[in-house]
Image (cartoon, rainbow over all chains, first blue to last red):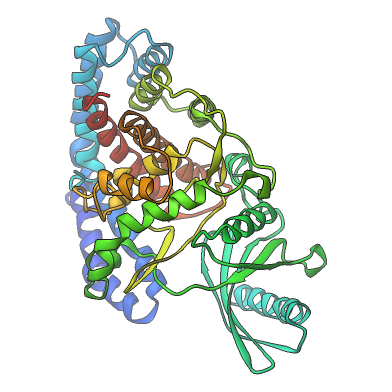
Length: 119
Length: 341
């Protein structure tokens, strides 16, 4: 059953905006330690907002690339476990161009959610 | 919560009053006692002890009895008694480290704890990198850190307490164990660890005192430059280049990404100062190896910080959120591996 608007992303953004613009300045005046914690919370809400918006498509792309790379169908978690094992044993390494393209794309999608400003 | 905290503060103040009286040989008044940082398990308190009209600016380092340390922390960090002895050896060797004064006894009831002199300065990277009062200091820090590190590594091993020896292979094995314990597949970290494993530097004939957490955020700076090196709890014996690589991990540049030496200078500037102060010649390939290692190390520490919350050993939104910083090091690792070496 579809929920009414706001969407999850819209609601998370609204909460983050309220906490950042109204609650944080008030806390900074009275409880600076909690002001710091509130910034951490606001930052985490911003991550969740991006994850709700961008995460499903990113997961689908990752899954599709992994199926191509490993040549079999399985869940995202199973495929990542298989890849991690191959990298641990040295069965694959950085000389594998398809592997590196996959990892670059996966990490680009992850950082776009976790911290798009990271360079 | 506030009731609990005030009780704890009162207890700490009473014990410190007795301990400083024993130490300084006169009735002591404890003033300005405040908890500085750290979680429940590893605490730092700041206070003044006024004895016979003389004011001593002091720091208490304290692990309360059995509280929320993860297995990994117990395995990796030294206890406070060992930290005290490392600090004493380094301080005696002329390293810019806080002067350790005395240890508390089990009868004091504060847990594993000691007292050292408080040194002026701040550790907050954001301020050090950008605020006007530190303008002149900023130009000096990279060179100073190189010089101080050479002295740390020159500490006579015979003056040190027993410390774990950790070589490249031990570090790699430890991080792989840690990934296995966390249980989530981490392809980029696995790739980096295998890259490191194939290129690992040979163990040294004579391992040196490695600080183990030598980075921006763990030293104090005033308007004139670095005043002291803090946070010795990851001290061990090993490869001196480990500390040089760790300092250059991108996460410790706090946005100043074009200045690899802790956000304050170039790698070459850091290495030159290290060599001038008597440290060995720095091999850039070895330094790159340790920078890659440091980057994957920090990434896995991020996952472990989150795990402290997820496993229920401590409840902390801040710790939980650090888990989402691990991907920053994945970005950095893919960049570093492209640079080859």
